[in-house]
Length: 60
Image (cartoon, rainbow, N blue to C red; front, side, top):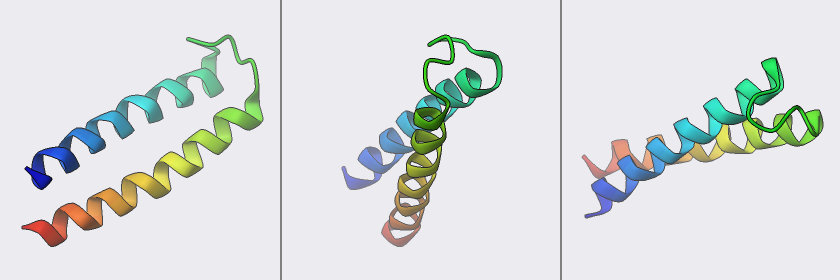
């Protein structure tokens, strides 16, 4: 079960990263409402994705 939760969290991270990166680059889906918010979500998402990856490796 913990492995499934890690995989699910990595999938959510990938979707959020793609969404905020697209908003930062081309303005879709939020119309580039706040560039600083996009950057913070990408950075914090990257940190959480990295931590999740290390936990997943440790579970193997």
